[in-house]
Image (cartoon, rainbow, N blue to C red):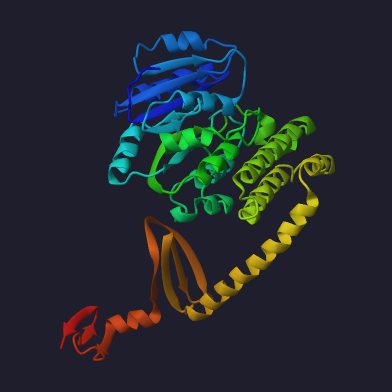
Length: 404
């Protein structure tokens, strides 16, 4: 690596995805923003990665080869150690970046320098997949919703909690990170081989040290959700017990490694409830994958060999108590807000109530404080008189304010 300090380092691990690599590299070498470096880590891929990379006569490309296959986590670690950019972003070699992705990340940085810049993703499914148009739309919407940077208002003071509550996705891709943040977290990334949940482990350790965050609403990442996945991954009814065992083992190792990290930091008690929220979320995710499988009991045995059911049940009891509090609060709000007519705008959502009918809409603008429009507030704007304030006496007629 040279001593140049570009704005952003794009790290691309490669293993057995050469048929998509050119498309991936085209999306980065042709970025409208040129102050970048591209770090390709060949994780001992058995195909023609060398030849494809040589086709690109671009001094911004740096090529690193592993002697043995180490996995995605280790490949990203290798790329990160060698990254010189002010920011680092990760790109899977079967995915793409929008051509203006780095430009918009830079523009966001100019507004405010933060630890993490989050952007949304466009999900793409292969046309030759044997699924209906409705199923395809559902799959795309599900992935895009999960990866979206505009589905929740994120509190940057409590980033770890936001991840635990699944408001902030734990994918490493789709975000740009300060170089110093990544380098600090690398000291705690274990040298373990994971076939599942490697993103979660790295992101949890990274977010632990993060203190600032911003979101770009644009879709800048193109995620090819069918590539690299067998039919058994897309259809849980076809999944083998052996494949499921690999998934469960990977998630279990990732959870255990993160708990070890918290113990190393001396914060396992402080973060305990949120850690077990993550633990439960992994258990629930894996259980949902086998809901349609005929041999469900065999899979449950595998799952529960890696996850402690007693811990799951104790966590659910605690969560039930928390949920009851939330439901009580929602019930009070519903009683205070007339069903005849009201509009509540908060975060990225608009909730409309008309004669007991609820309508939920998405708002492009994020509101940090809730705005409420009710029947009473409409009446006040149609006609009202305010004489309480000596300095601001007025009459409102059809939304027009007339000072007295």
